[in-house]
Image (cartoon, rainbow, N blue to C red; front, top):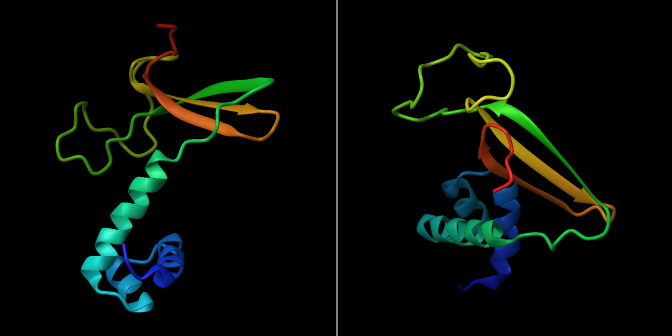
Amino acid sequence: MRLREKWLPFLQCMLGSMTVRAAAETTGIHRNTSFRWRHRFLAMAKDDRPRPLSGIVEADETYLLESQKGARHLTRPPRRRGGHAKKRGISGELDCILVARDRQGRTCDFVPGRGPVTVA
């Protein structure tokens, strides 16, 4: 990748949620370059994982209704806004979100799957 002096202004545009074209105009690069840079920077951020948690670690999970917003073909019947699960309690309709944090302030979160957390 070239034009290193334009990387930081481009990242500022990305953090400001600018479109590809707006970021290209602001930083003075071509829109195709802006598109490629955006994907490269996002790919690098995706692989950036925090260091392993150590010491005393506290973990908690929460459950949210699965969202298929924007999907062309739903794998379930549609719901109204703010809908509720058809079954009470923790069921397969809910996505589990697990968050863990150590005493140094490092946080790790991930989605183990649907339904209750199990040891496998």
